[in-house]
Length: 466
Image (cartoon, rainbow, N blue to C red; front, side):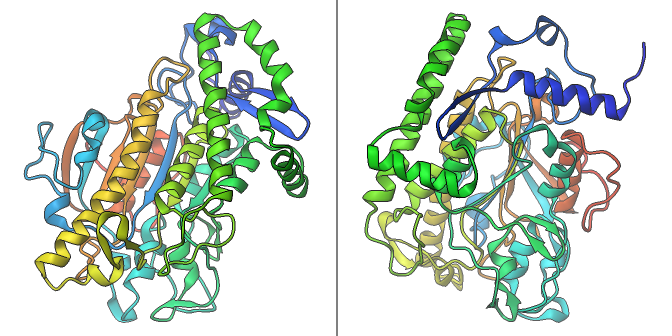
């Protein structure tokens, strides 16, 4: 049997991706659709792609990866289960993940030594964020930034051509790329996870409206903005402009895929309505935080909108690589809604005060609850191969600080959600005894189909037993 060359694999994967992706086009709209089994070629359903094909699961569905960052570390005693293995008891902080525990791999013993102080002195929050996906020590300067290429962008360079968006960068925080933010480090380190080069951060999108228009609007950015304004003035949905195409597509599908199309379009319309309500009726802003125009005033609402847009991007194969910064490390946001009016960062320096530790634990739990809702929706969304989107994903959830009280960067709170399309083994708590976190990223890049990547950041090898 003839072995396919790398270029042939690239070409076949791009063709398969385009043949699976469908669009509904109308005035000012280009609504991407998920794949429908009844429209797939018989040969695609009958056989999996070559085993080394880029960015696919072993059953032929797209493989997605995302990196979700939470700030200020976690209370270790409430994060880590009491024992490793497959029967590990979920810790207090991780209880919201119980519905999907069989698709969760808790990974202990991963470090980011380049985030430690060394001769650089203070600045652990900047180093925590800047090192998290790069694995390198940043240059301590407010004006001359130098970090490293992040793992998401390393993956996107090889698989990004298969999708309309090579990668997506999301944030639920205010963005800052200039000035000093932490002990002489540039703000760019704290407010960006993704780096396309050592000196070029990928500024994340904070506005659900802008992100929605990027995915579903047509034309240039200025045209998308004008179209969105017109729809708001006329009180019309983006789906109103693709109704004729949607009806034609509906007739081409079998019964199961018709239901899938109806559910998907209903979800798009409902998400658009939620964004519209957030634009018009935001709650009073937290005086301890800054939310620019275009961001929902309610933090939980903001996070869930961004997660839901990311889910649609994965569902429609609009991208296979994403990062999401829930808040920059050092964030002092308060959480009065859960009875914690004090600032997060202030509380994280608890000095073993039981009351402060309890409040930090509640914040840690709240963040996991938001992530758990995202996983629940991924698990409930069927992919083209019959598995769930969560099964066909690798989603890192973690932070660059371990113990926020002491600013440690060893045994980081990191978990991996999803089965990687069958290429990772979830449902376990495994500890790796002091390995660079970049070893995990190197192993994930392998599974995403990245070739010729011998090292990444400070990696010392692939992470065994993933």
